[in-house]
Image 1 (cartoon, rainbow, N blue to C red):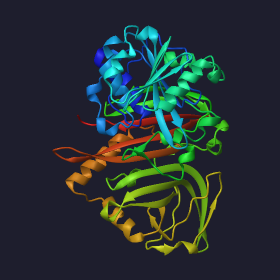
Image 2: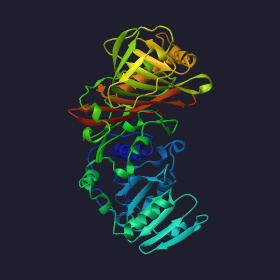
Image 3: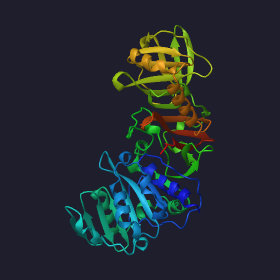
Image 4: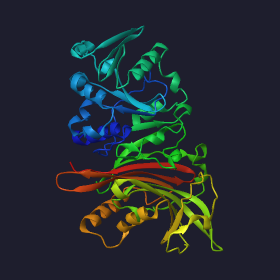
Length: 445
């Protein structure tokens, strides 16, 4: 197997967990993976089996974009030469708002490494348990048992792992996910949904400026039932990273109202200019009444765009595929009557309305939106046109038609120019089953 292609694939497993997608390949064969979950605390949200430490290339990582990376850095600096087998990476909620990840290494994969190398670490603290020991340093927490090495940026998570082993192992915590060991062996990573993780998966993707986007449709983002398998693909033109989920029954999720909706082409391409921070779209039936005329809207969207002094502003956008209202000037929203006919939480209607072709736009500050809309003109500078074409090019990595979309734009600066890096998530529903597709435009390194 080509080593560079495997580097890219295994490397992206970790990066999806922490929200940054880097180089992958379409390598599909997996060596024997890990099917034991003794050391994994009960609330894992994402699990990935890493075949081999040699399949990771630490030098490729953009350090400034990877939060909570110190445990992985420690792994490379101290254990790399001692690893000779598979290990698991899992991501967990800690407390109300914090999230950390755990590296669980079977002793059979690191037989020659011993925590005595930690003796030179500053402020080293040690605590003993009935099944092992935890060492906490300024940067990482490391646990050792007879069968595992455990690394995390959170001492709480390492302690949870030790206590899980004391109780007899994590197998019982995941017994409702009967096919999880098989999925870990045969897929690139797994997302897990359970009562403890309700709505937590929505934090993962996409991101804007290293933070999750704050859209009113977030409760639907990455919603799923039970465990879901994901695999990496390479775009036909190799311009994007793509992670595709398997099918899941949406009737057991909050997306059930979309079950009988037909996928449509992405309605937000018009807004894909550098001034767009992020956008969220979902098929949603609504009716508008204005001046004794009623029309139907098929899609609702929320846009976050850049205004004066780079301040972010939002707009609610409604899309009608077959009919439209012509409202050339900003009009008070109290002249409209809007009915939402499905389960989408009624989005707030802002103070002013205006039509843009097949779109109705609702905003708080019309002047700020006019500034953003100036970037939507057909005539653009060479730089604006290049960035717009990059956005359209990235969209080709998504399904041709879908039922929901989330997109994000992060400006990447280098010594030559500033470019947009587009990333996003879409949901395609086929015969009542959903499929997630996550992708990111590749950065030039």
